[in-house]
Image (cartoon, rainbow, N blue to C red):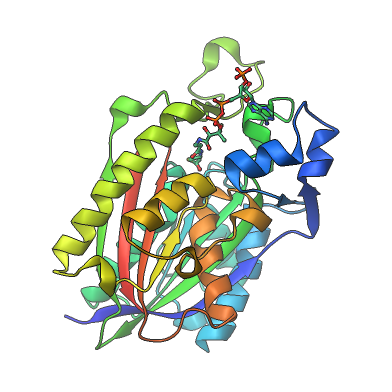
Length: 321
Ligand code: ACO
């Protein structure tokens, strides 16, 4: 059995930027409060014509360019998104049609929220390892701005839009060393996004994301600490073997706690939160793409990716880049 290696990455961010100062005009908040509690300074917001599909397509082309491959060489497309173009066809199928490559499997991971990218990467990794496909396109793409209540200051300050893409290719050397996925539905009420299908009694209610931020904060720090221990133990590695943490970008205080847990200086953590906010399933590939493009992450570096989100669902990937 071989390995799956990252052979190209790409990202797309909408042009429109919403700063904390812009938010001060919408809700009772301040730039200082948002920066101190979250680390976020601004976020990108999709234009009316932009969707998880159009952003995924843009990121996909950048990633294919970086990988030096043509659409016809893609053997599987997975789009992790909480905000799909449609319930069906999947955003992945719509993207496949735009890329003109009918035939390969294509599907969305809709419900793993901010853990979606790591889940998608893990699935693609299994198919490549087994030799079933040579190349997989794994994308996180989100228009979170369409599922937040803009009058709720506890939620609207956190999220942004964007898409990140990774092309995994078959390789003889590692590659993705291991992935670790978990979920715990007992925490279903901590973070959720209702829809009109499950909420038939009150179809006129505006359906926005609901979150217990404090509880989520505590749960995530605890859960991610155990996840790191599990990931390192499975590979017989020490904390000092990890060169880069590429975390889901939810809150700088959570990320700092995770860096501390790994004894990593913050310079060794891929951060986009300050400029992009929380882009849910897109946040990890966007952070990865940025650090690869500006050459901070180099070939041979050991990367620890982690994501957590509604479900709760969480997961990690250890990758020798
Ligand atoms: N501006 C100003 N004040 C605010 C704001 C705001 N935007 N939001 C809340 N406050 C107020 C509250 O009303 C409260 O006031 P009170 O003390 O008078 O009651 C005070 O600030 C403190 O509020 P807390 O909710 O206790 O603030 P906390 O320090 O917990 O920070 C936050 C809130 C930023 C949401 C934090 O809990 C957090 O980041 N949690 C994790 C969230 C997360 O990880 N989400 C995403 C993960 S999954 C996914 O990505 C889909």
